[in-house]
Image (cartoon, rainbow, N blue to C red):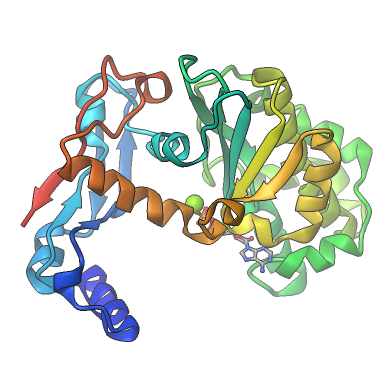
Amino acid sequence: RLYAQQIQQLLANTGVSPQQIEAIGTHGQTIHHRPDTRYPSTLQIGDPNLIAHHTGITTIADFRRRDIAAGGQGAPLVPAFHRAVFQHNGEDRVVVNIGGISNITILPGDATQPVCGFDTGPGNVLLDGWAARHQNCPMDKDGAWAASGSPNQELLTQLLDDPFFQLPPPKSTGREYFNQTWLLTHTLVDMLPPADIAATLCKLTASCITTAIRHHAPETTRIIICGGGIHNKTLIAQLEKLAAPAVVESSERYGIEPDWVEAVAFAWLARQTMEEQPGNLPSVTGATQPVVLGGIYR
Ligand SMILES: Nc1ncnc2c1ncn2[C@@H]1O[C@H](COP(=O)(O)OP(=O)(O)O)[C@@H](O)[C@H]1O
Ligand SMILES: [Mg+2]
């Protein structure tokens, strides 16, 4: 009901009628995701029956389970959209989504080469927690606090020593792993000024991203950023420095606001479903073949 109400509110606010909307693509809220068990499963809540019923708009949902049925991880799904929008023949590009966790999509300039996508490690999750603790803010707005400190190289080296960063892709991680408990296992954290820790955390995120690109897509010349992390100017400045000579730019340059890329991706996946086109990339999810994803609720 909450999703349906939000959609009705959005339509009212923008003066768009339900008849003008072809379909809704709704990912739902993941409450369970175990693709690697004997009986692989994933569950997103936010019932599409209710959404379709209360909005009167055809709703596509449950995008992940068909990929799992085809032997895939059911994730990540957004890289197929990244390829559709950002892939460019003759230029190796990487799309970086910086949210709580960061993930990248490698888009070879040779379209016959497989697309690859994986989590690189923390995005803003550690800095958010650190800002909550020391600044009483849910985030370091625009990276201003981090800009007032200096990265500590010794701590950075210790943080980068985590085994996750050495794992080969495909790999994924989450807030269950990269959190304040993880950060505080590094004793240097207690000894440095909090603003220096904030600066170090920005550099950590930037380093994980650029190291992954250097290892897995060394010919990359263009890095396209999306996700809320783009608003952290200190982080982006670090990323530009470490990624040079590759160009770092916002997804906005390609017509999609960085905060909306994920939402637009699920609208695109819904369109793929409506057109009976596959939505997964086997090279990314590990599925045996491309499959049409999701269920249609009319
Ligand atoms: N103005 C801002 N300044 C700094 N960071 C921001 C700002 N706005 C959003 N963020 C960061 O963006 C993150 C959320 O991005 P988002 O892409 O929505 O993440 P997720 O998909 O993981 O929820 C937050 O962790 C926050 O740190
Ligand atoms: Mg996100």
